[in-house]
View 1 (spheres, one colour):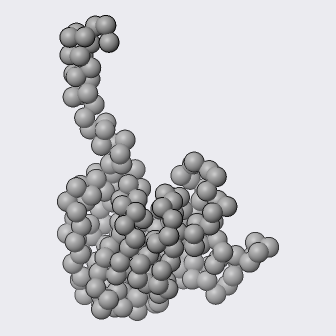
View 2 (view 1 turned 60 degrees about the horizontal axis):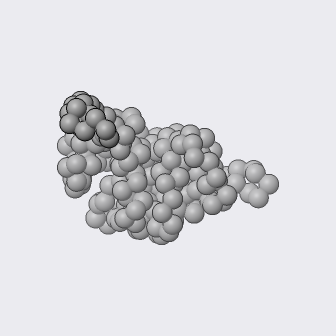
View 3 (view 1 turned 180 degrees about the horizontal axis):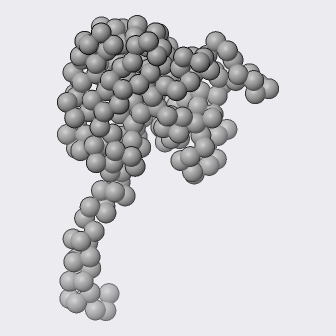
Length: 201
């Protein structure tokens, strides 16, 4: 998993409330167990017509937001079914952070396990950042995990809270496997000790 420290990038404005995981990655794309290749189908039913043509009005199809790394979203982002493919699709597209007033719990936790930083801010802060996001490349937003701030284009900084353990994992690029590998020497020592004490096991 890639480390997350600081990003400065274009934010896509998505003011809809209750953007659920089926909107993020529709059910027909859940057959794969690969984490790559899903970005093209991110928000598939909003991005494409039934015959596969881009819908020009959708924000991620517009030139100003095709390279977005951040989404500023409406309330309750990531609700619905608990599909891990949702953060996979966001990350594969290039999204590293989502900012909203609230998230569904399972989606929120899945983001951290996949290198995405979900940020909860008050409505006033989200409104300010949404205004920036609507300006595209003319108003880049900076997300600083170490200092736990989101800075708008005009220099206004908003502080956010994040669990210390989740922060540690993101800063160091540690998913569940990475966390286990941090303990590999202790695991090896236990295995040797256990083998000596219980050779029949």
